Image 1 (tube, helix red, strand yellow):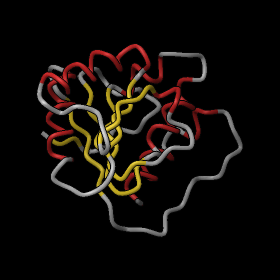
Image 2 (tube, helix red, strand yellow):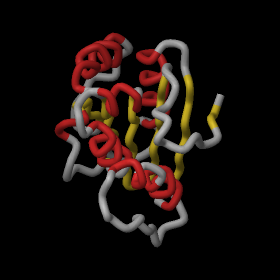
Image 3 (cartoon, helix red, strand yellow):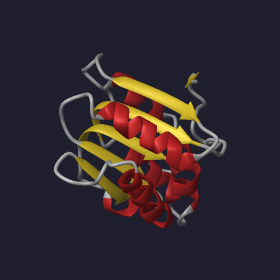
Image 4 (cartoon, rainbow, N blue to C red):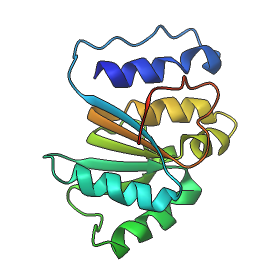
Length: 149
């Protein structure tokens, strides 16, 4: 969707590549950026809300955060299964989900030398809806979109 592509394109200048900005031919879709005090609670809330829509849901996080997020989802009765997948950003390339919940973009960006590239990939896995949930400030290379409460 256009809103997702617009956000992801803000990273291109920082990636040091000669890749042209992505264009979307779809004006539908949704991007929501939410700052929370407790990351796990914010991800659980976003996942619960995503379950109201049809389609696949991917929770993408820094590799080190995957287990704690999966555990928080299980504790709230949202087991990964047919519709809900929790995966590390390092495995997201080539995958698509109707709804993506990207947890803590700063942690994804800081996790490795090419972390901003990994963040770009994670942002662009959403087919219809993207929720960016964060408790830390967004990476400075990512333009600050309007945040939801």
